[in-house]
Image (cartoon, rainbow, N blue to C red; front, side, top):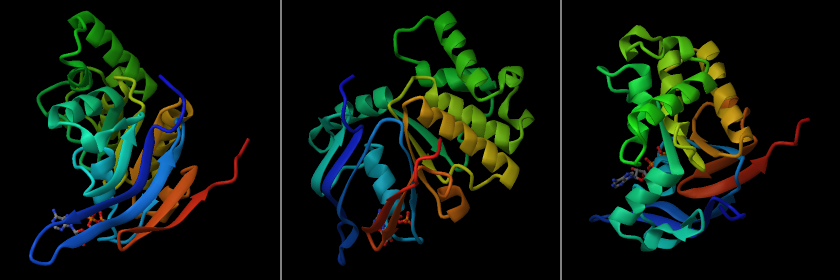
Length: 232
Ligand code: ADP
């Protein structure tokens, strides 16, 4: 793994075609280093989801250059982009997206399928990830027996079990009360401190204030990009 940014955007635009094309992202330039925790904020329609879709390689820029771990995601085939996503990224969603009939551990294990690992090794790594989010005691519960906060922590365990370089989180605390939201943010912070870049989209300014860096969007452009003063 080389040095340098894990995400690097130069003049990235995304226009949705149509009778009236929508310029959802307009020449956005920034990069994210390993270990950063970046909150992307902005009103509805400002381009946050579009940006997250590009960073997650679910979509490609219509102009500009997007490098993920030094590789040009805009010039890859769909298959290569899927592989990049699987190898370098973890995803956390507002609605958790856990498989209801699988236990917490089995849900986490799903992120390790097709990697040539034995079942025993998958199970061991899944338990390690659950321990990192403080859920060892819940490993054998199915999602319906877990609180919302616990379900989101399982989802984070699933996102980090493959040791990704980037975790992308879309309103990860949107369905949680403030206490559970704080716990989820603590965990995402510890994930970033271990060297994984975390990019989270939120419209909650209190949540954004917890990130080490805040990018504000309006009408498809970045209007500010502020790093918090380093705290000891
Ligand atoms: P946010 O996540 O900040 O609410 P979005 O990225 O969803 O913003 O949307 C940015 C702009 O792009 C909006 O004007 C939205 O209507 C438009 N948009 C989003 N997705 C599509 C799409 N698939 N086709 C056409 N326009 C879209």
